[in-house]
Image 1 (cartoon, helix red, strand yellow):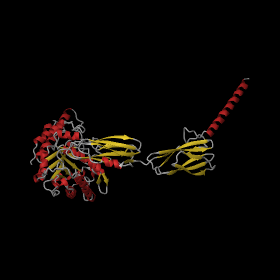
Image 2: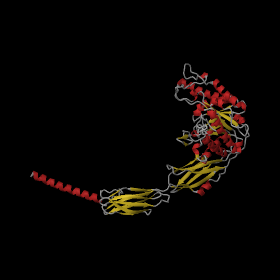
Image 3: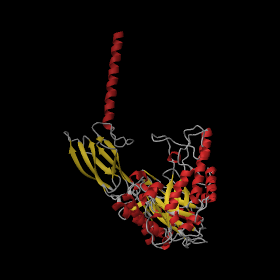
Image 4: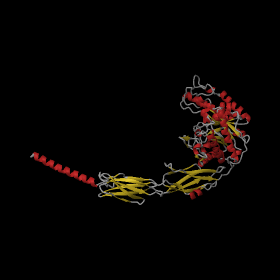
Length: 598
């Protein structure tokens, strides 16, 4: 009885197992075309090689491989793609290579279709996708209207944009504000131009650029505005170099900003500083500085390497920053700064054939563009020529440097306009005082008398001014000036203090000032050491402020015009508020005490 019962159960279980197995095989054989998963069949006898086919913009032929026991049929939901040939392969003639042919996508939008593949009771859907050619175009008629000059009162404008990708819009000037509306394929870029309360005409740009698409260039719409009331910047002042120098109370550098470059890509904000605004410039003036040195990069903004053509948008931006200074009654200096080293690292005969024409071309464009500014704007031909290789600087390199500087002066004078009255600044070798005294036995010539200045920089002793860690050749020194020494410390300066500074400045007075050529101390200062505390920090900060005071006073007394190097530490780059008053106060004390000898 028990055995029969067990046999009976086994029989029923076996029948149930066979039924489930047969049913599963039946479902598997007939369920290849599940539309919830396009292109995926569950039978090994019916398969599609892809769920989605992507076609390039220009169109192409793409093959879909289908495994099927019978010849499949294909229908397509859209007409931009067609089915071409069927090729049968495989030992059982059950593999079909189906060619899909797409035409060129001449529209502005991505397009898609569905290919339905049927083979008996099996079916699958394959997505067909073709991207559109990237489009980012401005309507020419609306741009022409937007680029008409605005009156000094300002106003509103707009232009239309055709697009099929993500983009961003940016204004190069804070007096141009932007609003935008986006609709499918067409957008309106609206903008407002503020009233011009400055005494000069101005230009700015609205730049439209694609996001994450390097194939599409930028679109630039130039916005110009007439001058407001007041003295025009093109009215010559008829001031000589000595008169300008005598009028400069204290000078300031906008360091690490318009000369910034990262991984070969120039950007005003690449080194962490914000874009220069007028509030910052006004803050510099309110602190007591009436001259600003604006280090500039140009090489990365060249858009035509054969002719060294500078991007007009960058010229607009530099002009805007110059305008902030000139419109506020200040002097301004622009230069070709380190700029990737194309000139600074190549002051030698071998490099001269490549460097000289570039120096001429860049300064011709710069001078022509800014020719309307009067003598409050000065040009400096280089920055620190061969600074990193100054141990190699000899008479041959000095001869090449003079050629570079002569090319600069000749190009500026040939540009005409107010450039015939402009004061121009040439640099000593590596802007090093000792090298300059030793090697600069002659200077570039100028067709205009009394319009030249020389330039040196002063970071001496380097152990105090620039070292950031101890080296084999010497230690960092924190305490400068005998009154600031800490008893028993090995961090007191052992050289390069007050008498040394006076002696170095005396060398430049004898070489240049006594011959009627003022000297610009284009950069000076001491970096902030943040690793000190307690009495050491107190003595160090006093030393640092005292150093700046002495440069200001001793320099002016010998006809040297000092410009402090700052990279954003001392005056706030947004508001113009003073962040380190002890430095500003020290410079003002030195500037008041020092009197120019002319």
